[in-house]
Amino acid sequence: MFLSPKPIEAAALFSRYSQLTMPTGALDSLLKPTLKIHAQREESSTGALNCAVLLFAGDHSVARNHGVSAYPPEVTPQMVVNIVRGGAAISCLARNRKAKLCVYDVGVAAGFDDLLNSVESTKIDFIRENINLRFPGEGFENGSRDSTVTAALTSEAHEHCFQVGARAAQRIISEHSAEFLVLGEMGIGNTTPASAIASIVLGCSPAQCVGAGTGLNEDGIRRKQDVVGKILARAEPHVSHTLHSALERAHAILQHVGGAELSALAGAAWQAAQMGRFVLLDGLIVTAAVAPLALADKTFAPWLMASHQSAEPVHKSLLSALGLAPLLDLNLRLGEGSGAALAAGLIQDADCLLREMATFSSAGVSSN
Image (cartoon, rainbow, N blue to C red; front, side, top):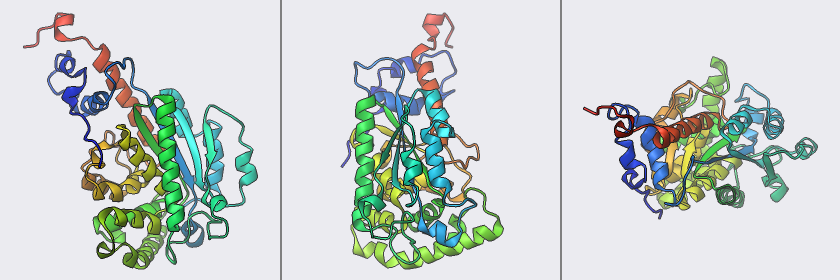
């Protein structure tokens, strides 16, 4: 069981908030989430809110075998290198937010060790906890296994990735005094397992849950819908309500239809909530990764915040099921945690307003 977040009235800034020089409620959708984060701060904490970014990378055999992405699987390790070298969108945004960024390889396909190990040391930490290195010979050469024919992860591999995520959150929050956490991912084809998870937890059809991802055409979308249908048909007996408790079922969903980076994301969010830190979710993949656990444990869900509503059609339904209202709706479909990093900037701007904006009395402005 998680502790409940403190009510925003507990934030030291709450009384000041009601006196700021603006119409009542004018910026509520922006300032209230920021006040929720402030309410968890130590009373001695001052200054701007500090965030940190965790990104988990993994490949998917279902993408290699079934052509469910507009990009080839080789892009995953290439983009990981680009991120760690500081050239990707999330690298730039984290740098602009002055946020620590840590990147974890939990399931990148085999054959790219030379590329990944060649990354020069930067201010961006790169840590390899790859399931193929941890569990050699268990079918993870191409990343998470083809979930149309077998579970995406073994139970041991799922637990490994979940715990990698939990340790990553523990480390980055503790070492960098992060007061809220931004989560992102990198993995070609991972909108397919995310759509499958959404289909299971929402009870909707593949046609309702599958979108264009990184840019599939109509034929590609139909192929992807067919693949998700096959995933669901194979996985259904293993994620049945009658076989598991709610939390056991949530973990079974992640193991059978998710993937390495999705399990790690779930672990990171779970640990952050245990530490009393809010988690700013990115798009469909990150939301799908936490959804089974959030729907199974209602005390976990209040620690989640939605950064944006992505272009994937099922993301809106998933956010609604979780009771989350997005801060942004820009039709984004980049991933990497980019939408969450953009929203983090809004939270930091709101934090500035709460701390520095004049009150009616201090500015000599009439309040009525």
